[in-house]
Image (tube, rainbow, N blue to C red):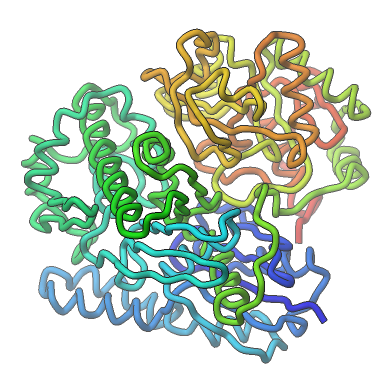
Length: 582
């Protein structure tokens, strides 16, 4: 009998579910993709329904259910912090307690209710153990150092560890309120962006500025030790007791109040972003070097929200003794669902690890027949092609500066579109970045785009000595190859996805055909969504996004749509009744 383990993460941000069968991930998905509510934190009922359906089982067929953190321990930390910071904490306490008392403390009963008639065990792992398990157990390494860094779990905000076989040992941690993730989020807030959502905007903004404040931040605000451990001077922060991330002392430090969202940014904001990015990188580099010094290991696995900082990751592989790096593609809280399931099966139950992850295509897929049925019901005009025709047509369209929605196979797990739910364009066109930002994505003009490059051509075009299949490493564009301006950031860097044929044959062939036409083995790859919405999941989501933007063509499976041939989108139609995912 196969062993089925369900992992769940929820109630903070990026809720998700994952199903392991005999140690292999059958399916994993974030709740936001189904509810269309970005960073949805609710109980992942839709994601659970999907992963169980993908596995062909019912709740009663599960052998164990794991939850990615320990709510009672987290509640203890919150109460202790409120007591320690009273009376300043009263307003935050008054806002938080109803949610805790109504929902977050009752995880076991919620799981029992949602998974009726499941009667098996419900087990809990500490938050950073879930991160560590998600980083190491699906990795290709038999032995590796482990580094987890995020905002906060129960008490830990970062942990150092080692994985060997199925065992994980976390031997050191940094504790709340001292947090690299919350420090970065405080600057995200101060720069006028949304916390727990837009930290990547700060990373994208940083190359426009100079890190003129970095030394002062390190001297006065963050006291960092050689081993990467640190303490924050909490006089500048309010997140431990209030409803704001920063306070008046922080404002005084930078000579003014936080930027109002959506207002103009200038050199001041650019320099602040560059400064916190530099500080973040320095802390991560010291942590990685200390792990090497302590363990002697040269392979590193990383997870936690800060592990999504691909600029820091790129420096780890280039500037530390770590020779191999594996970052969990869903490194944030969503990945905790995978982590706790692996922890229960591999570490606690001592079952052997399955084959290492080679891709993150773990979400729903739709057959050509299902897609055609939807298109017919929507009144769309389309043409159906075979694989060769599809690759040739799409590559030609991209080479002619068309923007193409690309919807193929299973949806990616994690925050990056990797050729399953992507928008593709020509990186050679210097105007394409602005065109995509303004007319397709409806987002800030400073935001860079990522290149998808054939894995065997990556070293020719970028200063990178390893694969980057999950778009989690930034590297410089080689000096003689700067003919791809729309994926080259202002500092001549790029956030790279390497594409190998075994994992994504159709996507690989498309890029190879684009190279045959243009001499460039690279396409722009950005997530198939608009600002404020999750990445598309279904043909319905993709068609609506296509019709509501200035995208030129849409490829849904083997069906190709030309925007000029489509009837006007009827906004009075209840689209959920026409095409209901559930």
